[in-house]
Amino acid sequence: MDMTEYLRRVPKVELHCHVEGTLRPETVADLAAKHGIDLPTDDISTIYDYDTIYEFLETFRFVNSTVIDREDFARVAFETLEDGVRSGNLRYREMFFNPTLHITRGVPLATVVDGFIDGIRRAEAELGVGCRLIADVYRQDSAEDTMAWLEELIALDRPEVIGLGMDAAEAPDPPEKFAAVFQRAGAAGLRRTSHACEDGPPVNITTCLDELGCERLDHGYHILDDPEVVARCRDAQIVFTVCPTSTARVYGWPDLTTHPINAMIEAGLKVMLNSDDPTMFHTDIGKEYVDFCGQNGHSVGLVRELVLNGVDGTWLPDAEKAAMRERFTAELDALEAELDPAP
Ligand code: ADE
Ligand code: ZN
Image 1 (tube, helix red, strand yellow):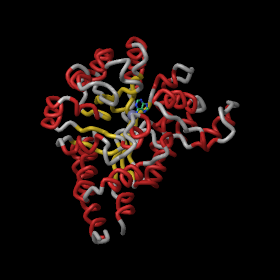
Image 2 (cartoon, helix red, strand yellow):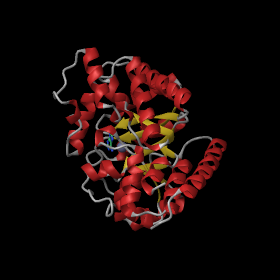
Image 3 (cartoon, rainbow, N blue to C red):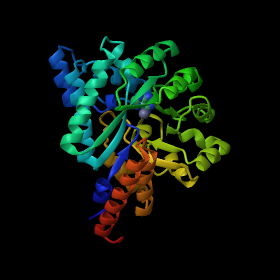
Image 4 (tube, protein in one colour):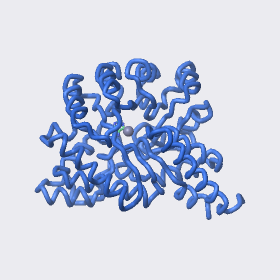
């Protein structure tokens, strides 16, 4: 087996993937036809062509306007898990969804959540892949509106929803805006993470840890601007869910060999790889490993570390995490034994 096949086949956990950024273009076309929505282009294959985070967020909003009924949400959740299994041997994902994107256009929160859960259960039964949900705060929203849906979500009390996260444009809305929201989530037993240092300063990480109660962090690249914050996160073994391709595209690190993820690894930070918004960035979880590890010539030892960092970063109960670590280790051993010797 060559390195590319090996990288596709290693078992994977994913902790940073927005379900709304995973819609297949054909599914967008189908759902638009179903609901009588006009597409902005005649060529659906060009729907995900853009260059900035702002254009990206606009497209994100449009494609999701086609997802309306409970069955639509179920279809989207099932298909993205199927894509993860097929492209990269995905075994478990903690998947973001964005409540305000849907409730502000009149879709009830229960329709969104229960639809996604239907899709997750079908994927688990048919494909053997596990999945849990993380509700994402949209930073440009008000704290009051966010608290309102959070209360509704807590009242729904669905066990598949295990955490709160935060996305959208970081620079204009720093994390302290949502400290009370995150504290309420923690009091209700939700785990917490947040996008941080994607294009904001290292102080955002300190705020996420100290005021929001985050246990892991999404992205984190600009942490490298502050060695003290790096040392703190390294010592606390905070897991960073990094995304090579999406940030290469919209944050200006097109060359993966000079992407700050490498410097984060060298600094001793605990990182694991993710696809972020895979269809929207023309990637998948297998390709993230192939491109990032392949282009950097990373060793199988480092690949193993990245994979197992993903397991450690999950919010599964300790016993399930330990069992997953054991299964993944055995599978990595077997795959390494099949790998062609280095030339
Ligand atoms: N929404 C979906 N993906 C995102 C990302 N990587 N950064 C900010 N907001 C997002
Ligand atoms: Zn993201």
